[in-house]
Length: 176
Image (cartoon, rainbow, N blue to C red; front, side, top):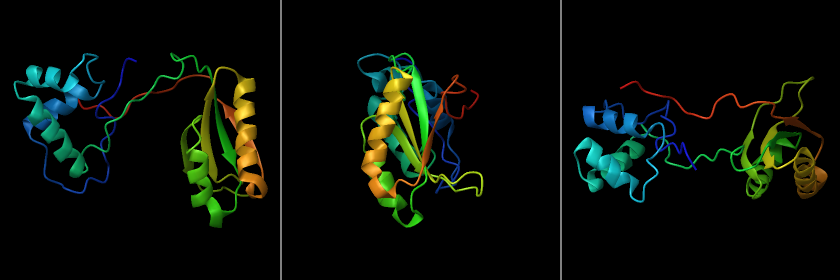
């Protein structure tokens, strides 16, 4: 997998407003396009920055604790993995049950992300969004049918919005 962002997003609501120092900034810039695809990526970064691997880890943890880095995670490129049909399923579910239903839908292995959005009545009654990836549109629709079955009587309607192109697969970028 290429292009695995190490510092995928900077928090807009950083808890600690202490500015990052020059080395923290260099670490962010060195990881924002992805961790190096080597057996020990943090050691590789450490060598490039002239510090130890332990200091790289300590600085990343500290920036995460301060809210400067939200998370360090793999971001798969679904197209490269053969998941060429991607559908955002949007659901109308009872507002009072959305937390429980969102957790259940989000736990499904074929849902990459699931979240609550506001309705925009009368045109848009959907308040639960769940992204489904598959190798074909038919497979996406089968998986969406599984979600409908899981929701049972809480399923008050849905639609599937299929992706037509990739717009962006990166987080915010700092210049060096």
